[in-house]
Amino acid sequence: MRTQVAIIGGGPSGLLLSQILHLKGISSVVLERKSRAYVLGRIRAGVLEQGLVDMLHAADVGTRMEAEGHRHDGFDIAFQGQRHRIDLKGLTGGKSVMVYGQTEVTRDLYDARDAMDGIVIDEAENVSLHELKSDQPYVTYEKGGEKFRLDCEFVAGCDGFHGVSRSSIPADILKEYERVYPFGWLGVLSETPPVSDELIYNHSDKGFALCSMRSDHLSRYYVQCALDEDLKDWSDDRFWEELRSRLPTDAAQSLITGPSIEKSIAPLRSFVSEPLSYGRLFLAGDAAHIVPPTGAKGLNLAASDVHYLSEALIEYYGVGRDTKLKGYSDLALKRIWKAMRFSWWMTSLLHKFPENEGFGDRIQQTEIDYLFSSKAAQTALAENYVGLPY
Ligand code: FAS
Ligand code: PHB
Figure 1: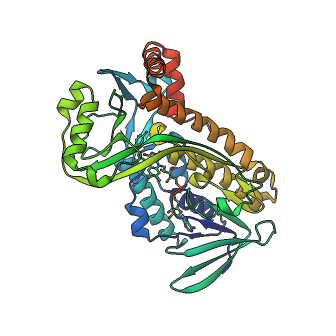
Figure 2: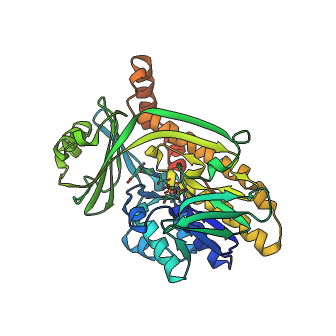
Figure 3: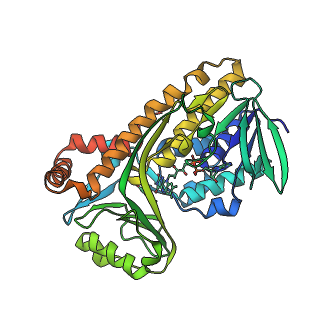
């Protein structure tokens, strides 16, 4: 089989890239390791920047998002029982975010690829990348016990943190930057009405908690937890009691609980690998970087990578120039590191750090106090949260 762009990974990065390229007449094949049901069973991000919303519309994948998503013009930060609203719209000259689950974005992308006869090969195992430094790279994989070869001109590594693409770049070329946080997030999805119309990011002496949602009858909650927590030790009742203990009084009293329909623990890390390209291989999304979800940047950063990479491929196939392909890594990394900074800052601001006892705690409290009292500080937070320009 032959295609112009072999895309490794059928998550949001790979599917969005495939859809954008298709609309520009550029062929691609997506190789996904898992089944479609598995991919669509993952509960992940919930907040979309305007840049991603615009990209989904441009890719003819925005209709259901507009019908079922919810625009949010602000969110609350709760600290020591005090809630302060960050007025995103007022502070950014009218910008907002869209609350619409990554699972739904991925579903919409799969549906669009199917509708346009896109080639997405699920359960493609043992994917391996070859001849990346040549102008005739190829990919091999197995499916149903058979071996296959996919000849291509470019390989897009959209296969997430645990994928094969990043590790196909020689170790003496790859430079990795990482900060692993001493805690994780225990997340619950429940068919209950959200505790508030907007998100609430809570800093409490017992640890961070986040009140989010997917719709007016589907809520998403997280509590900061120790890295060695075992999901089996967290009954629904224990989760709701812990969440309630970290919320300001009004939210704690109005919280409506119910059975969890999904419960998972995600570790938190900041990670960037450089460069994002090696010969004909280009990394995008979690394959290249991971942010702690505090700033709601993971999925949105994958989108800006796909924006830059698709623009570069469209230039190459459109006018035969490789200027943007050569500049892809440096350009994408500039925005990646700004989102890395913001996600690290939000995480440092709102979580309980064991080593912070004393001075660190007081600095954290002062940082939040300064934020609540300074429009300039709130504006800086708001412009990062709605998404810096591409
Ligand atoms: P993905 O990891 O989504 O997709 C990569 C795909 O490649 C997967 O489907 C995988 O099966 C496939 N793959 C892997 N190896 C392969 C191989 N060798 N061959 C073929 N296919 C292969 N972001 C937020 O903004 N907010 C959140 O709350 C949030 N929560 C998260 C919770 C968890 C547990 C995780 C892991 C991430 C979370 N994120 C969150 C970040 C998440 O949304 C990512 O940023 C987003 O999924 C990035 O999309 P992709 O780059 O497509 O990577
Ligand atoms: C979510 O709804 O899953 C969500 C929202 C905002 C975040 C992280 C996760 O910062």
